[in-house]
Length: 160
Image (cartoon, rainbow, N blue to C red; front, side, top):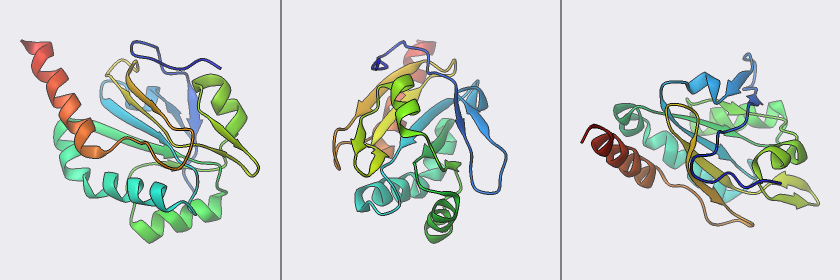
């Protein structure tokens, strides 16, 4: 399982939000900076806090030109309920194949029950990894303020 470090091209992943057509990442965000979050499941309080934080930061993320998508192994009804509960407006995919995702991205997989550990990627406009954050457990994850600060820095220095 390869870890995706800075400069790596993010692999093509399908993300299917409830009752919506599938998106292919990173192509769906071509031309924009993006955050891709793998979360443990709707049962995880740390994951819920992270998803809510990214939702609360929507205006700041939009102002900075950053798109967000999240993905877990939860089934479609569970994911739909999570989206409704927290009013999530970014794409949240369901029914991920944890082992297939791990093979492509190096994300850690919990063996029993099977789910993806928290993993986050910041992608540049070309779909390359700028930052990857791999967690082997409940804590250790991207936060919106860090992401917006990083992208602002990258934008300032790209034009300097």
